[in-house]
Length: 246
Ligand SMILES: [Fe+2]
Image 1 (cartoon, rainbow, N blue to C red):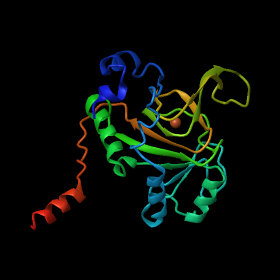
Image 2 (image 1 turned 30 degrees about the vertical axis):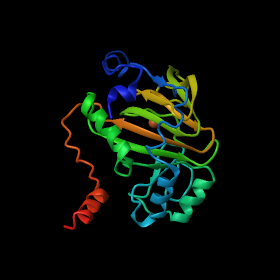
Image 3 (image 1 turned 90 degrees about the horizontal axis):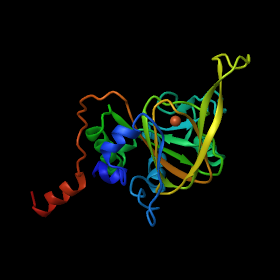
Image 4 (image 1 turned 180 degrees about the vertical axis):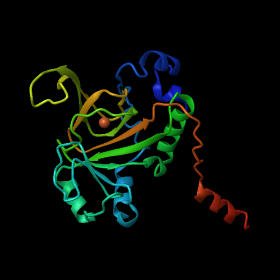
């Protein structure tokens, strides 16, 4: 996988010099390209992972606390840290409009692994990670407006998502102790085959417009040497052993 393919038609040098860290960029799906990210992750992948509940250690619900109640402070329920919700509880929350977030999906999909590896090798980033954002219906809950501390690339695999962007506006109103409030200055609707680059620090929130699958491939900003372990093709190796009667 080449960075020039992922960022096409923008050449990687131009991206590094003119866009990285400076502004949002939206790559619209080219004509006939709406299925171009289908191999990254699928609804079947999600089913398999969540049905293997005992071993599905990394499951998060956006804006839900351990009791299954909505949180308005942007925090989340994480099975890895607090396993109080059962598989049935999470399923019901999912069906009633809460989004599921799966971190570390680069270890579930060799295509996501290749994407993360390509960016780590060819861009001035630190370690990367691929999170899947999965929603079952229109207006499914996600996070409140927030900033991220990573460089984010959002691959829209299925469904549509409205992205809202905000700027800080100074105020001395008492309900804003930080001295600013957020004002929405733009919103866009991304769909299948679209890619969005979101620099560190941009205030944003998402609104799913129906069932959707989005891969968030994000990176620590400081470049450092990463010894990412290789992906192995275990099954083909096994076939080889069988064929050669070892
Ligand atoms: Fe975010």
